[in-house]
Length: 112
Length: 116
Image (tube, rainbow over the protein chains, first blue to last red):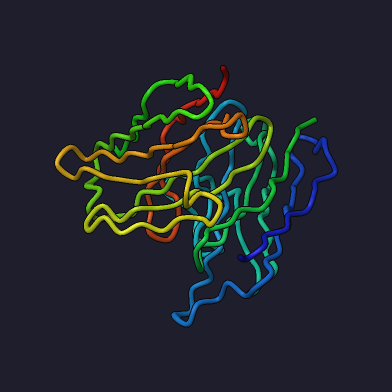
């Protein structure tokens, strides 16, 4: 199985500052079709997860442009520019290259 | 608008089974995969498996192969997951979600509590 490893944030993050969450996969997520099958989700407290980013860098419909995804085949970053109170929650990366699908352990964002 | 409506909370005794449902509106489930994910109390997300409603093909995570059974009814646009031989470790919130290369839409989750 592909192992997803997420980094921690130096919480709390001051409102208006930027925050970067890292994720590493144990295998390259670059498909032969040129797409990288890495997704990012946000789970706000008490809610279901919501898709933020798919194919490593494509924002899902309705997601603020303050969220951006980048990376290589095995190392990925989700950047949140100018964090706001509504960004609080746990962020998960997930690989969709092969089954079983696997998630990172989650990175908690708190705002000051 | 795409919506996934999951069935209500379940209380199951050890050794019994429960069957959860996930009804989709605004999208034909024949055109996507239906996934199930769990979240134990205070823990992260764990993928259980997925079904292709168009043909009934399923893929499971190894640890859930004898625990979960996924089915789908395209006539009602609803997916189901049966959990068998319940143990206290199965206490969790179970989410359904649809997507082919991402989990684009999620249900609200069903809390399953296993207790005698």
